[in-house]
Image (tube, rainbow, N blue to C red):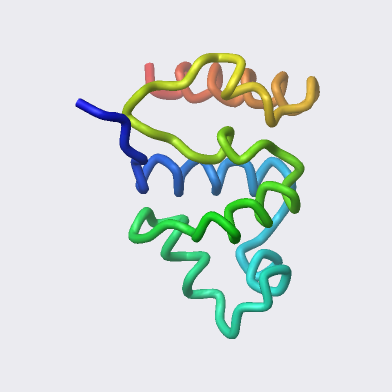
Length: 105
């Protein structure tokens, strides 16, 4: 099987990075000069993917590498997942995961 992009996981990951950076879909819409915000929501919902040019622009806006946004079936290394996080964000995210585990139990 050859590597493919998982649109749903990519949308979830993009939303996570946006949340950590305090960026709203409307901010991306305005940054990319879109007429409406619907395209951004379609990316976040995993219905479609941004073009390579838009993905590049988003990566610059969010200050993360493009490959830390995109998720595929080839799997991701821990370093790829952590590449976009500051130390403080990494600590907060770790705390958040532990709280979810405790609440699920």
